[in-house]
Image 1 (cartoon, helix red, strand yellow):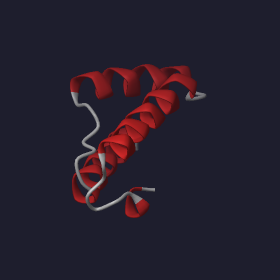
Image 2 (cartoon, helix red, strand yellow):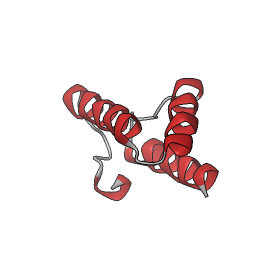
Image 3 (cartoon, helix red, strand yellow):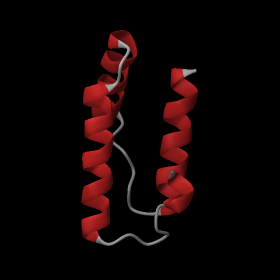
Amino acid sequence: MSMHYPEQPDQNQKEKMMKFIDGFAEFYPCKFCKAHFQKDIIENPPQVNSRRDFSLWLCNQHNKTN
């Protein structure tokens, strides 16, 4: 998903990605993972200013989950 995120997203795209991450965290099926992910995105909010920033953020979140 991050590889299709724009290299230089506009404000609308940034807001949509933030809403997507919030929705993903809300509806994550595992209640334990959900709680951890929700805490993580508060402590380390999604970085949506560029494809590179978002890719690194998402990779780090994936590694925390695994």
